[in-house]
Image (cartoon, rainbow, N blue to C red; front, side, top):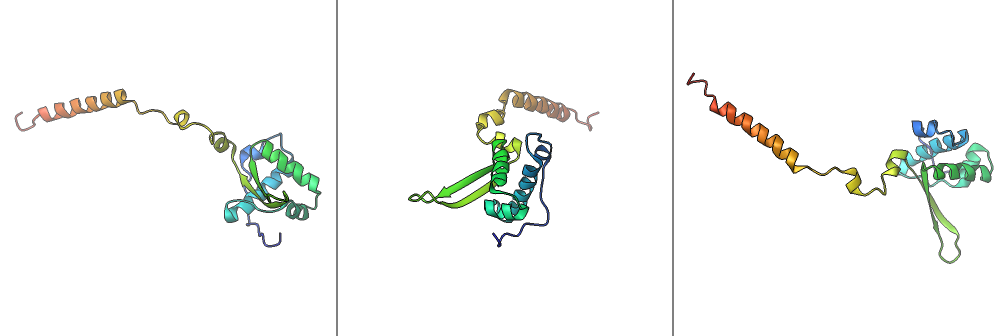
Length: 141
């Protein structure tokens, strides 16, 4: 893909950088994907683009992509022609571990309910303080 121009920097976050399950080349590929993602929000580079860029085989690129997807750092979306099953487009999106773990989590698990009892106690305490302050008239003393 000659029309893809990576940005001047890549991002390699600590969770990816220190993940011992990933090979060093998979980490570099992740950084390249983040660089390409900065343009339009996802990476649409083909395996052939990565092969030519890094001068490696198709199998190497597939292995690195599989590692990144297996451990939750990327997600690949493949769109095929219904009749021929030919791949029309492939998009790669990046994930950071904590964000992906919360994607399918029900909102009730994330948010804590507003406890009216605590709010009322706090408000009642403040109301008493305000009453006491109003009852003290500095002019009468």
